[in-house]
Amino acid sequence: MKGIAQRPNTACSGLTGKRTKFARLALAALVALSTSANAQSDNANHYDLTAALDPASGALSVTGTIDIVADKRTAEIEMLLNGQLRIEQISFSREAEMQTENGITFGTYPLPRTQRMLIALAQPMEPGDHLQIALAYSGRLTTESFEMGRGIVSPLWTELSADALWYPVWYDEPDIRYTLSLDLPPKFDVVGPGRYDRVGDGKWRLSSPGIVNTRITFAASDSWTIAEREIGDGLMGAVYTARRTAKTDSILTGLEQAFEAYRTFLGTPALSTGAIKIIYPGPEVEPTYPQQAYVAGNDFIVLDESDLQVQLDTLNHEVAHLWWSRGAPATPDEFLSESIAEYLAKRHGGDLWGAEWLERQRERMRARSERIDSSLLESDGFTGDRQALLYNRGPAMLFALEDRIGRGAIDAILREVYSRRADTLDDFFEILSARHGKTMVDWARDRL
Image (cartoon, rainbow, N blue to C red; front, side):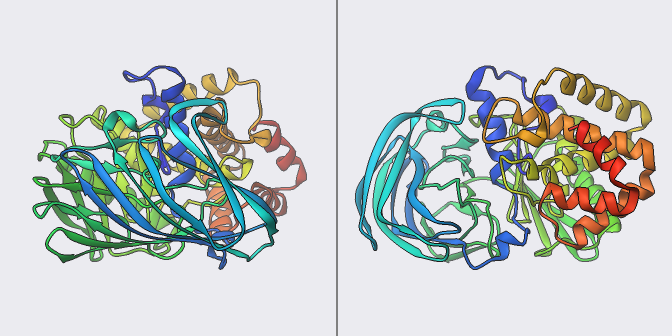
């Protein structure tokens, strides 16, 4: 996800076509830490998996359970799984039938190497009802098999990212808790969001930091380099690379500057762990989508591969997600996650690199917004316009609002949105109306 997820101004660096565009948007919606009121309900799905992975060959075998908890009346469940994996056993605690389909379309994007698991329930589930799924599956993952999200499989660096679909994913209800027992060759180290503990030779235990919609994700290597330092008030920052690069110190400095700017603005982020890990394999490692970046678990930032200033601009967006990760993905409410994070990142970049840099970014966002016929208010699902609406039209409106009411006034609005844990665009408009009147709300809506 920016958010974390692909930066719009680096999206075309060596990548073309529908496959690229989908990769950019998927993580934007689905990887950020969930801090909304809905995500803090008891309806999170629980994944308890045991996985064995050989990074040299890509061989993966998984057994475990998925406890599905319905958020609404549910008659069928559609899950996606990497097409390289075979389901060997599956059973359900309720009467249900499952069909699988390979080579699917998701939203408006064809995914020839992805499979759909369609589970039809004999009796619909009501909100709060559970469905336990016990399953076993295996196969061989390769870097080329990842269609929806960034992924890498090699001994030097293996990264099973949020949307590599190495386990079944239900996008309709993304809030989860997870525990993962992971077996790797003995020399491998692991890093992940939340807790990740070595429990034996080649054996690791990972668990989510509360209820998240990050997906289970981790990186592993038999030879990586870790650079770390304190970035303020006891908070540690660490950069994990396949090989130490000259960018490492600049990335840590960028982390320190962005974190302090947002902490001064909004206070300590929720669920802060006291350490932030930046996952940056470096230019010699080739993920499926090198221009993709996201944040997971409030402490795990996956950085893209691009020019240093563009990387730092990306980092500013991902750090903002430690505070701004709310609003349902693929809906207008995602404005409260992606558009606000992008606005704050560009604003912070202007403070660092000057007014001319900021004006170039604003002009780029305005130009991209003008080429889109649809409205962010009508966003519905993973469509081609979604990325441009969230990362251009949304922040462009916020900058125009700042021009009208001033930076102090927009800061007051964002502080109230944050303190109230508001998670819908209507909440934002309600606060804007209370402070500046309905006419200002109408003006803002017209620009989305």
